[in-house]
Length: 323
Length: 226
Image (cartoon, rainbow over all chains, first blue to last red; front, side):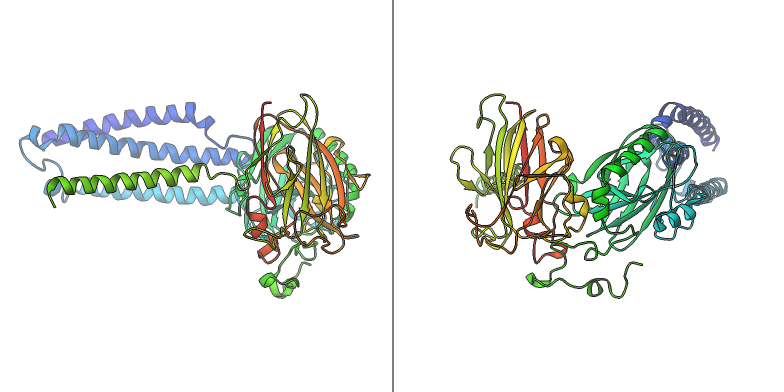
């Protein structure tokens, strides 16, 4: 037993040294570069969460590797001139090993569970779609969303107001409506920095998924549903939006770049686009969180069996109608 | 069977299996282009704009899906209308596009596509009159769009009354709208183009059938250095 006791001490010492060194190297050298980056609060939080998971997982991985190394070399049966020198019956009833294993794994799992729940709540959904009635949302979001729907919303640089942006998915392109700027629609997604954004994601046809990877925002787009996701921009730069739900032949081409710009640059862009698109905005349906394709103009809409009479919206969606 | 015979049989079957796998993978990686690629790279003198003429028809009238809506293109060499939606274009070159629109229209599902986007001057002409926005809730609505999403180009193709042309290619005497616009090709690469009007009758959301099959309502621009 004395030899094994020494082995255990050696393993513990090497494991502690490797784990501390590995975690420190990872945290300071690799961690800051882990995707999705630090363009938004949710991206930063996501990176932090991933790094926390990693510094917990790294010692576990190193411990397993080290144990395997000892088993393969030091405890090799031929070298020991006997079989099962450590495992099997020898290990049975080792209270210290059993209790240590149960306690360490239980603490790790419970810590991660609590950590994940807190991170999800504290991050207002961590950039994920929270459905039409989010449980967690940033201060001012309800007021901004209510005003946006009523057409009375406002946003200006340094106002710290939440900016609602509607994401409209369709086969096979995303477009964006800005209700606080007259409800204009654009193929460009431009966002102001240092601003809480409320993405309101919906679809005009099949299920899509709005994934702004560098912003750490991901929300499914369903027809007749408003899926709300929050983030706060903190860094200037470009990002990419992709559809992450297989949606048909051009799914792979359903992407577009986006930009986080200064608040003044955003104001200039939004105001000029509102003015430039005024004619088309007048032809758009009134701003709503969701649209019934027929009510929105449903060219080639819902045709059963090759007939020429489209299904009514009631046939498709039951009695549910947009307010 | 002798040991050598069995070995030869196994080896033969193995080679057949390998051949089938290689063929399947090669077919997947290079599926070919339905209708072929129409080459516009040598259709004009160096430095001159490419003249790209297409027509949209309510039903192609032939082939595997005669009732499907489709685009056709005028072959720059023969001058004939052909059923091909993959076009080879020279890079960094002005393309002057003319669309003969023979199909009916309706309100757009998303009026955003009523705008002319990404063309030179962000305008197009409809029967000789310049426009930048078309309200699809008026008149005959919009039948189709010509859009190259990655280049942010989209042009609404205004519908005509009824479906005056039963099968393609449609004759110039049939009622139709003529739209023109220009855009500049980007650097070399492959760019998909498509219609944004869900015009595939009989398919859920109007986006199956002709909207989801190469060589009907979408295709590829193969942009190459000339």
